Image 1 (spheres, rainbow, N blue to C red):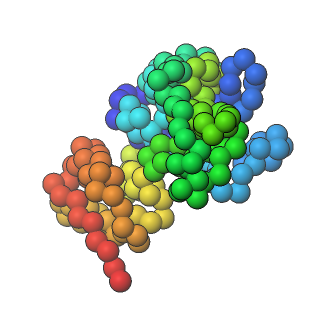
Image 2 (cartoon, helix red, strand yellow):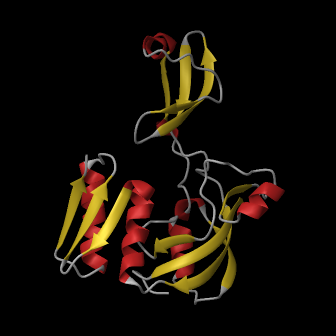
Length: 213
């Protein structure tokens, strides 16, 4: 595959040293392994190669593959979820969290908008919080298969909108532009990224976002 190709893939992502599955596209296998999550949308994933729709190491692997090919590859932390960074472990006051109506406990996941963090410990009014990705520093193993290359322009538009907003963004291709209906308000930086990808890969001059009430 080449950078910029739209492809449909199936994959299983494991932590290399434990064999624990952390991500997969096969719903049946998820149920068999007891890791099924009803909030997850299973089924083949549609991505743009080289646009960070998947981790860097998987992107690199896809560039070496062809349609209908299947490969297994070990991915180093720097090409996965990054190396652990001690600077991303912070200590904050328990009182400050309680002012925000948060009662911290070890293992608790805190949502700070663009970033999630995990509480490591609570001791003597001090809370140790880890902002590293849970898989930072871990070697990964991916088994991946490329099902097909996507050529249809409308399907490509949906690949982009579904990655960023799913059913809340509905693209409509017109003559030299794409109109996207927003079912809810999306941040400007997300809309800007969608517009950039649409213009880059779908040969349109303009992308309009429309809200209906």
